[in-house]
Amino acid sequence: MDVIEQQVHSGKKLILVGITDLLILVELCVAMYYAAQSESVNTTFMTIFFGAAIPTLCILFILLRALRKHEKAGEAAPQTATTIVPGVQTAQG
Image (cartoon, rainbow, N blue to C red; front, side):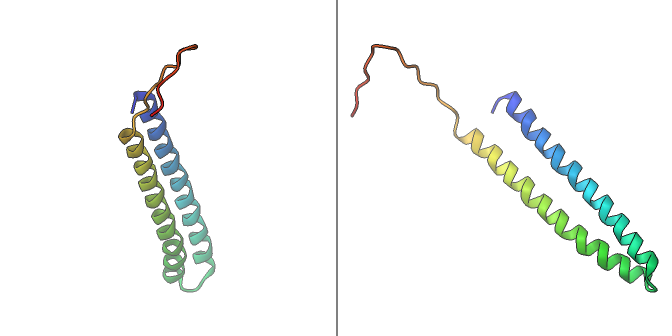
């Protein structure tokens, strides 16, 4: 894998982590909003926040593993260039 592909994959990882950070921040705000309206603040906050944050982090983990697997597959199967010369026939066997 060349340098450009590594930068693309690292950029994709950065985007995934950034989106996840924003989602966690939104989940935190929503949980605080609903907890402030409830009588049992702690229970409501923990139920809403952890109920949303845990699946979000699991999805991030799955996506990062898939990206890493795709990254390793690119390393394992290098692209081979074939040159086609006009007028030259290749042997088929």
